Length: 89
Image (tube, rainbow, N blue to C red; front, top):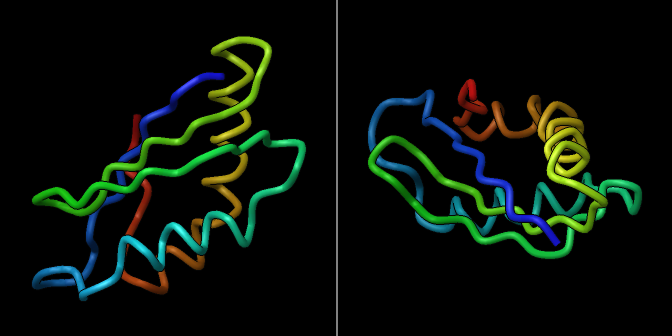
């Protein structure tokens, strides 16, 4: 199992709404496929948004990164609708 860290930045002014980390957690699970090997998500609020720690079942770190890149690309639009964007690596 690999742990991939991703950062989401707030695109809307002001603090994040109460429960937004749970919402993002649920969005990721709703869009994850079995092929991506997502096992666990740990969101942590930060000053600028959220850090996501994504626990991934993969053969190597390169595969884990690619699997999570695929997932984060797929959820980019739903995440944006809630005031977040995936930060560049």
